[in-house]
Image (cartoon, rainbow, N blue to C red; front, side):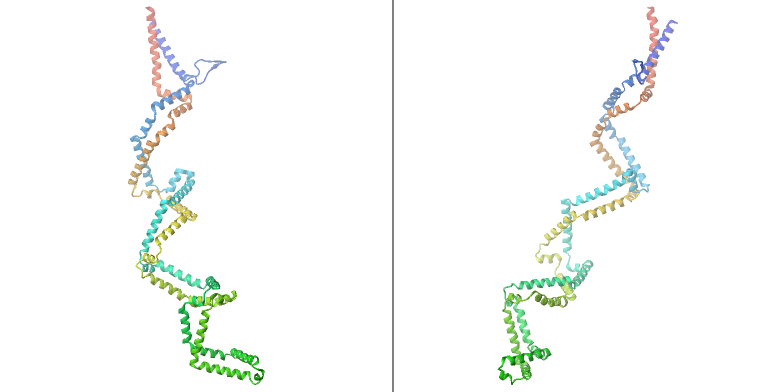
Length: 505
């Protein structure tokens, strides 16, 4: 009986002490005081050493369990690749059967940031385009392409171009513009300015008319005068018969008799009869053929004397008003009788006829001796430079980008994968896995180091309430802690049994 009681008491003591020791790991949760004195072993071991335990656990997990190598190995595992593949295929499968647009899908991802995202995308893509076309290599490539296209067009026959609808449209517009322009005050004023400038230049020209006017023109004028000698004589007769001429001649005859002749002789002469005799004599002179030659020679002599005159001496005598009055009829003659619609059309038709004689436009340009290829390059380069610096081009690019993005946003997601779902699914899956693996390979190590697993675990443990920590530990090691409690009871029983035995010895 003595052995049984000793064993039972030892078992009870061992059970209670171990149970109490386990409880004292967590309880009391806070420090207990009696008056000013602190009760020993309060708070419990774990609440008291919570920060140290948290740090130790965090360091142990970070250094030995969730190490950088362990995390990277898990992230690169085949299972992770399979999960990515499954996620991509499930996502594409959902899209293939959905009526949502690209816009709806992005809105679902971005929420209230959608508008800012679209604005930034428009701005950034537009800037990307502008920066791209401003690159020297791109501008050179554009210039080279445009020049090549122009050279190809220059290889065509001129008649092919002349027969094209575009050319005829341009031609008609040019013709109509030229015909309308010739009747404008602006054209009249420009001709007037040109003629006045030329006349003013003649005022200081130290040359004779013979040197200025081509000899062929003066010779033709003389031949014309000689050929028209009869008409000239008849024209003089006609002028004499005109009333104002008669009046003037009578006045001349009367003044001559009164002032030039002796008064005694003048008393016997009548002005009217004298005038009639003079006119009769002139008419008889003009009727004789041999006198016609003398008149023509006389006129030609006058022309020769005039041609020997200095240009500046003649034109310097002209007043500004006189020059203007003399130019007026010339301008009117030029704009109404010389430059008319028929002349303009005939001129353009003759130019077209000249074009047709060449085998190509290129051959026609080479005939001019102009380095047209260099000129084309200069023009293209200047236009490209102007284009890339133009605000209107930047605005137009922004408009085009905006339209493209809006059209893309209105596309239904399922239409993107229509008929190609499997191929796209596999392609996207491959791309996603490659991007993921490249990220893990190149950047994941840095990310893991930034994460600081030990600190995360430490902070998380420190956030736990003591009750919650106790519950977690008891849930994890309840069997083991119970076993320790009963082990204490067993050891107590053994010690209680051994104590009387040893005492009897």
